[in-house]
Structures are given as structure tokens and as C-alpha cells.
Image (tube, rainbow, N blue to C red; front, top):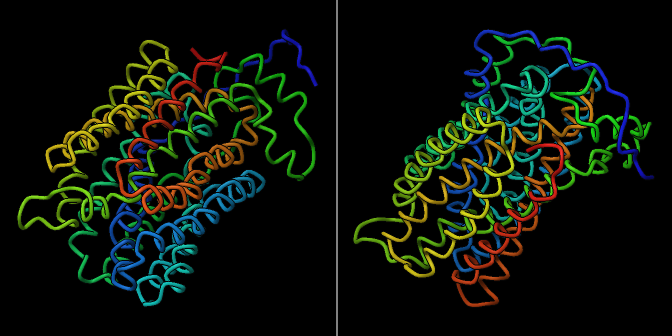
Amino acid sequence: MALPDVVDPVPAAPEPPRQRGLLPLLLFANAAMLAVYMGVGSVLLPLQIAEIDPGNKVALLGLIGGVSSVFATAFNPIAGALSDRSGRRSPWILGGALAALAALAFLGSVSTALLVGIGWCLVQATMNVYQAAVTAIVPDRIPAARRGTASALVGLGLPIGGTVGVLVASQTADHLRTGYLVFGAIVAGAALLLTSFCRDLPRPRSAPGAASRASVASAAVRPKGAGLAAFLSALGNHDFRWAFIGRALMVLGYFSVVGYQLYILDDHITLPAGLTPPAAMAVLTPVSMVAMAVSTVLGGLLSDRLNRRKVFVGVSAALAGLVMAVPVVSPTWTGMLVFSALNGLAFGCFMAVDTALVTLVLPRAEDAARDMGVLNIANAGPQVVAPFVASAIVTGLGGYTPLFLAGGALSLIGALAILPIRNVR
């Protein structure tokens, strides 16, 4: 059904009431989440799989990572929709975190590939319940004019959480059960703080941010009921759909490489004498995350000041694609240091500003968590595909060089997908 080019104007959404300490607590909540994803997913899980079956570690990591990401893809939007319907975020944040603690404890206690796969699926499911509700707080409670800055501050959760996660994981690499319990305690503590000091508020009932004409029109024809068409109705919005495509391609390119970084260091890169792959991860991750923190803050602040989102998102995605060539040209420790720094700069700016861009194209405030959950399919969905794709490339094409090239191509195409977005500059 064609939408009219012009619709009657609607009143702007009232500015959400401010809560003291909300952004620092959101930063901590996101950092805890990313600590689990990076520390467990990048270090502890690959180490656990390599101990169980070193000869088939690449294929097993691909299989377990891919199947578990199906759970992430499903649980994020479902939990978001249920959170929207309940009108509350705190029970979903706290319940998801406590369930994740139990799942991580289980994962640390098992010693077969099947049980590791089941445990990681449970972790992905429960963490995505937590993530769906936490992600929705920015469009719930932050005015549109401040979302670039807010997304930048909250986006620091990736460099902070990623660094802490990898450092904790590298220190507990010889004691996997302890490492898993530490990560469970971190996310449970973050949830307790956020839900205790920033309680749920009544949510606005009108379009988030500056309502674009396309957003209003999309809302006017929003499907009713709880069917799949209604659930995915945000994808009918032109701008939201292209933002979804760009995010999906960027994430697929990124995780096709990053998910195998421990094995890349072990099998592809010539490391200095005495430096083990887990110890190398503990060096590379802070390098990447410091660069990510700088670009996250600068990208978010400048995008607010200039009132421009697309140029930051497109350029950072293009840079992420180009830097994938560095380890191909120089498969050395120095090459990996350069790659980590530049990749951190690109990915940090992309995630901060792209998150702000997406909150400005959400069709309806009532469905913010659901639609952010749909967007998170673009985060989790490619992670379903990435392990299978990466494993097939590494085993079928004979190494990690083709993997870097494929990841770079995907990120470059993701940069082009930003161009058709109309109602955000």
C-alpha cells in the first residue's frame, strides 16, 4: 500500500522526565552485558571448545556460535515486545540477568561439546531478555536532541565492557568455572543497581524524537494484532528498513572476523616469543577498546552538534571494511595492533551514531522495545550466519586471509546501505 507523501502534522512527544544517574547506570548495565559477550564469547568459550576437541575447534565454534545466535535472534524481539506490553523494563532486566547468572554457572560446569552448546544457548537467550529491556531505555527516557550524546555515553559500554571482559577472561583462562561465575555476578550486580536506582516511568504514547512524515504514515497503517506481520511491521518503514540492512551487513562483516580472533592469533599471526593467544587478546582488546571509546564519544558529540548522522555512520562502516586488509598485507603482531586500533575507531563511531540514527526512525514510541528488538535481529541474526560462514571460508578456502577479505567487503556494502535513508540527515 503506497503511503502519501504529506500527512497532517502531529504534536511532538513530550520530553521525558530526567532521572539523576540514569546514563552512568545505563553505561554500567551495557558494559556488564558486553563484558559477558566479549569475555565469554571471545575467550572462555573458544578455550573451552579447544580443550574438548582441539582438532575440530573451528567447526565446533562455528556450529555452537551459530545455533546459539538463533536463540539471541528470537529472544531479543520477543522479550522486547513483552516488555512493551507490560509497560515495565525493570522485571525483564533483573529477571534476565539472574537467569543469565544461572546459565553461566551451568556452562562453567560442563565438559562435553553438546552441553557447552546447550549452556551457551541458555546464556544467549537470557542475556537477550536483559538486553532488550536495557536497549529500550534510551528511546523511552532520552529526548531526541540528546540521543547522539546519550548513545555515545552508553556506547562506551562496548570498549569498557569489552576490555574488562577480555582481561577477566584472560586471567581466569586456567579456571573456566570461576571465570563464568565472575561474569554472572557482574551482570547480576549491574541489573540490581539499574533497577534499584532508576525505577520504571510511564512511557510516552506518541512518536519518539522528531516524528518524521514517514514515521507518522507508518504508524497510521500499523498492523493490528499479535501476528508476525505486526511484530515485524517496523521493517515496512523505508528508513528503518535501510538502517536494519546497514547494521546487519556491518555486524556480519565484523563478527565473521572478531569471533575467530583467538584462533587467528593461534593459527595465522606470528606472535612474539612467549606471547600466548589469550595474553595477546589481553593486549589487543584494550588497544581496540580505547580507540573505540574515543570514536564513540567524538562521533556521538559531533553528530549531535552538526545534526548529521548518516555521514558518520557511512564513513565509519567504510573504514571498518578497508582496515580488514591490514592483517592480509601484514599477518604480524604489528599488523594486528594496527588493525585493532583502526577497527576500534571505525566500529565505535558506527555503533554510537547508528544507534542514535535508529532511535530517530522508530515508527512508534509504544513499540520502542519491540522495534529495537527487531533491530537487534540485525545484531544477532548475522551472528547466526557469521560462525557458519567464517568456518566454511576458513576450512574451504584455506585460511584466514579470505575471511578478512569477505568481512571487509560486507562492511563496505553496509556503508552503501546508509545512503537511501531519507528523513535523517
